[in-house]
Length: 141
Image (tube, rainbow, N blue to C red; front, side, top):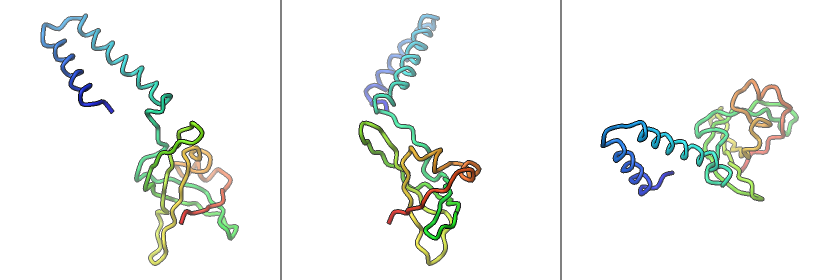
């Protein structure tokens, strides 16, 4: 996120460039500035300053689970929380989700997945989830 001071400096610089007669040189200066910002943003994840979450709050996610009974069930879950952790110098997003199909009188189960599970165990579309081996579902208490 850009600090308020950096934002004011940017707006002031652009305004001063555009307040006089526009020229190609001024336009090129603005383009160069945005190119620099774009290049800096590419480096942010490498520096641990920007993290790409595998999904958004409210997204529906799917996983094929093998229950204790041995039955296989497709879990349809709603993402309720995204949290961040860093282990062994590796960034990770923890996705918490509850079952979206709720039976009255039965407590909804909460599941937590590390972002590395996406595309392997947990999916954002049901078709991909149907084509994998089920994992053993261990809901969080």
